[in-house]
Image 1 (cartoon, one colour):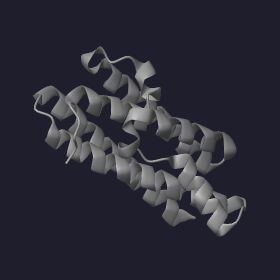
Image 2 (cartoon, rainbow, N blue to C red):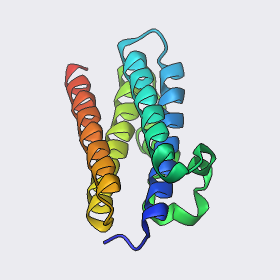
Image 3 (cartoon, helix red, strand yellow):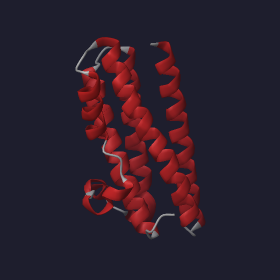
Image 4 (cartoon, rainbow, N blue to C red):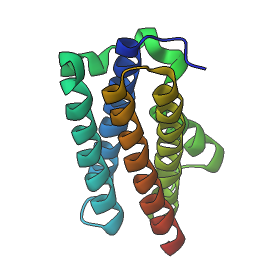
Length: 153
């Protein structure tokens, strides 16, 4: 269960999307001019679209995407996850680096799917419920693309 009101749920969603967007942009730059870089660039653009959709609901400003401190229990720290994986597996490049980046992306998308599912159940407003459900489905599509890409490497 989510112990947040509707506005807080949207704020958590914004913070999550901002974290994911920033992570994907860094990975796109890291893997520039590669198929993995193109995937991360696509995902960053998708998350930016989610931020716009969430910001439009109730006029929540985009700047609130950076208001993470209150919502840490509901967020996944992608940078920490990436550092932990690198420490456990050792720093490497090439396909190993891509696999690690995709593993973090997969965790982010799985987290988003779970959060949006619970959030949609927690809100009463039909429009917000529909928005959160639609975002959940988009995150599922992202997850499928990541899984498809992981199988190729």
